[in-house]
Every structure is written in C-alpha cells, then in structure tokens.
Image 1 (tube, rainbow, N blue to C red):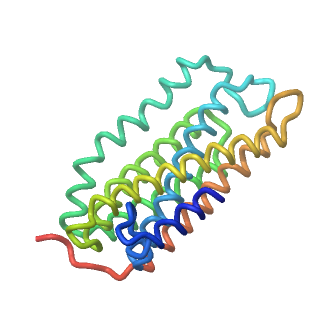
Image 2: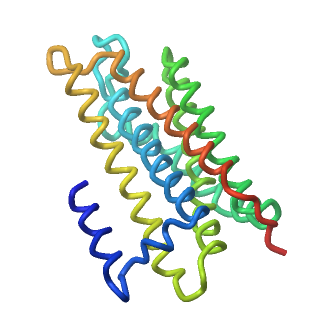
Length: 225
C-alpha cells in the first residue's frame, strides 16, 4: 500500500505521467476499475477455494480427497465455459452495451457465490457452483475493456486499459492473500476448518455484490451500432 501511495504521489507531480491518475478518477473509469479489483478477487476465491476443497481429505468433513490432476479436471468445465462465453459476451456487448454485459456478469457471479455458500454437500454442487462463477467472471472480464475504452480519450486508451489490467491483478493478489489468512488462521491439525471455507466463499459473494453495485452506479451508454 505504501508503494502504491508513493506511485500515485509521484505520478500526480509529473508533467507527463506514465499513468494519468487524474484520468483514472473519472467516474466510469474509477467505478470500472473498482469492480475489476472485486471481480478479480472473486475469481481467485473460487479458484483457490474450490481446488483446496477438492483436494482436502474426506476426514475433514468437507473434502473430496482428490489428487492435483483430478481436482484440475473437475475445474475444466469452468474453463471451457469461459472460453465458450467469449463470443457470446461480445454479442451481448454489441447489442446491449458493455454496462449491461458487466451487470449480467457480476450478477451471475453473485448468484454463484451465494449458491456456493449454501450448497457444498456433494461434488456436483461444488463443481456446478464453480462453473457458474466462471461464467459470470468471463462475461464481466469481457465487458471491462469496453467500458474503459468508451470513457477514455483516444490518446490515453492504452494507459487506461493497462491500469485496468493492473486492477484485475490487484484483485487476484488480494484473493490469494485472503485465502492464506483465512485458512491458515483457522487451521486445525494443519488443515483449515469447513467454517473457514464458508467464510471465504461468503466473502466472494460480498465482493461480487459490491462489484454489481459499482457497475450500476455507472451512467448507461447506448450499445454500439
């Protein structure tokens, strides 16, 4: 955080900054970047939490005792869904606009996390919720650049999209840090408790809902012709 604060201070003092922080404070850009951090956070909440649950021993009461390969294969449907939704997301953006597309993505993300908090008894519930979360993430991620580009002058679009990519990375980094804090802090006999994972996925639901609220606060723009 100290490094980030120093970077912002230096950029505000430069005549020709590498990243125009003043531009980043523009309403649409700021709200989109905020949502990007939150969606990135949710992506890693799902990825890390689901992988850990699939590999945890059955003796924990919540695990499925899978190998690394097996856990990866059960995550494959979510990855395939994200790839399949790329052209679908583009059509949504074209006909409904990037804001509506991101509202849809963050809405699906919120529903997926809410379901994951409640549904964790069977393998298919866990995998199904992870797939729903992946779908929401794919749609939201596809819409982010369009929202940024629409709100940015042509000469500054590269810097603006780069800053948005940084916001996504910040979100995933925070998700990893939260995973370590919650699971290690609640570990019993070197294994996290089931309550820790419930709290972790509940945190994903909260951040997804906050992302939805941030995008709703953006003034709607008409879809592209």
